[in-house]
Image 1: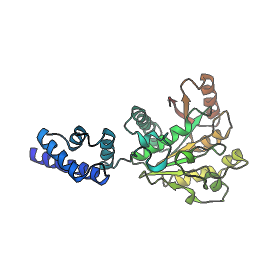
Image 2 (image 1 turned 30 degrees about the vertical axis):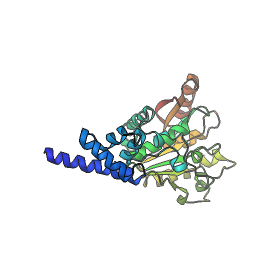
Image 3 (image 1 turned 135 degrees about the vertical axis):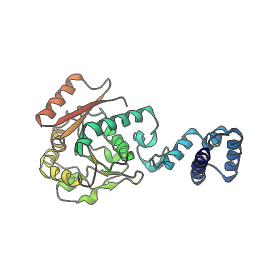
Image 4 (image 1 turned 135 degrees about the horizontal axis):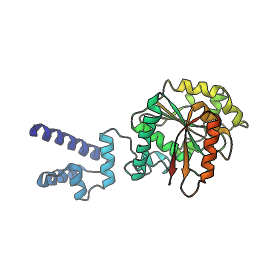
Length: 286
């Protein structure tokens, strides 16, 4: 048994070493030094490399993420917004909280057969887009086929977070000016796709209130396990009610020292009047 464990450990350490070599973090000569120290002091490969000052802890975390097929990006990699902390800082306490929220949503909403959830907020700046994008990433990291839809057809923010530029999206699909090829796969993540807002329409409220949004979500639910919809702030427009009504459920985002208690009560009442189940509320400290 001890021999088998030793062989498995050796194989795992070799994999970490190979990843670091392939990433250009170590040279062949560096790897030899690491393996000598590893043997002398009975260390793991990564621990020995860090002790020698050849790599940083962040390099080790990235190599481990690759070994375990856990999508994780180095700072600046991919060209996405640094606000995507789930992509760039997956081991931070902030992202650990997002994973806890993911677990709660899985148990309380998605495990019950629901596929879509609207992310609602009272004010611009409460962080609904930030939360929706990072939640989409952590759901995809779990292996869930995840789609993030930017349903804010007034001041969309999702395209900027993922550096998508101007492209067709939800508004164009709802207006029959585009098909589902408007959905964009995010190559840095195994199971993440985004449907941008698309062309800003003159009539967003009417466009989102049409029945074909519900039909679209029904169609998309056959291909995705989790569909998150970013919505405009409640104080900006009533569009969020139409979107949340089609999704069936909503998560309310509030920002510490920014969102008023009366505003939260107001948005809950508006969602209830639209027949939307409020799954919960989350405080954004970002």
